[in-house]
Image (cartoon, rainbow, N blue to C red; front, side, top):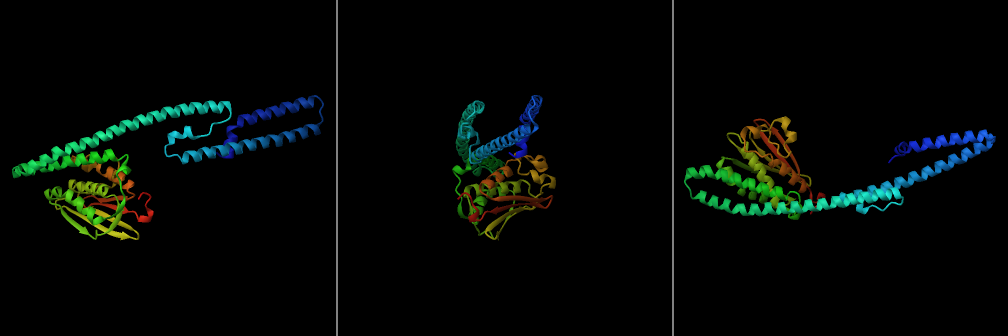
Length: 336
C-alpha cells in the first residue's frame, strides 16, 4: 500500500476534518477570540493531526506487510485465515471471524475434493493394471494368429495400450513427486528402453531410427522420461512421411545436456506451434488424419516441467518436426 492509496482511501475523513476546522474557526471568530490564539490552535491541531495520521499509516502498512509475508510463505493459501493474528478492533474482529468461517468451509471443501480425487486416481491406476492383463493376453493370441489378422490387429492393440498408458500417467500427473526419483542416469539406457517399448510400432510403420552421440549422463526420472520419449515417438509415427526417419541427437551445452528428437514427417503449421502444448489441441494434422487426442505433447510439457527439463518444438510443413529437451545441470536442480 502506497501513501497516495492510503490518502485516497481516507479522503472522506480528511474532508470532515477540514469542515470541522472551518466551523470551529468561524465559531471562535464570532466569540471574539484573537487571531493569534486561533492561529496557534490551528498549528497545534495541524501537527497533532499529521502525527496521528502518520502513526496510523505506518501501523497499517506494517500490518499489511506482515499479512503479505504470511501469505507468501504459505504453501496452502486457503489456510491464510487460520494463520493471521487476531485484530484488536471490534469491526475487524467481526470481519476476521467471518473470514475464518469462510476459510474453514473452504478447507472442508478442499479436503473432500482431495479425497474424491484420491479415490479417482486409485481407481484409474487399478483399472489400468487390470486392463493390461487382457491386452497382454490379446497380444499373445495375436502373435499366434494368421499373418493377415496380425497385420490388422497388432496396430490397434498398440493404440489401446498407448491410450491406457497415457491414462495412467495423466492420473498420476497431479502428484508426480510421489513416485518421481530424479537421479543420475544414462540417456542411452533410457532411449534404448523407450525404443524397445515402441519397436513393434516402428517396425510396422517402416521407421528408420538414427542415433547420434546419445551416450550422455543426465539427471532425471527414468520411467517418466521413457514415457515422454514414447509420446514423441508416437507423434512422429502418426505424422510420418513416405520414407519415415526418426533421429535422436544429443549434445552437451556447458553443464547441460540437450536431446533432439527429430523426424522428417509432415510438420506443423507455424501458426499452430504456440498451441501444441495445450491440452486437447490436435491441430489441422490431427483433424485430417484422425486418432489424435491432443494429450501427448500436453503430458510431455507437464512432465518436463516437473523434471525441470526445458522442452521446445520447432517444425516446418513437409520437412519435419524437432522436439528439443534440455536437461538441467546437477547444481541447478531444486528436486533431487
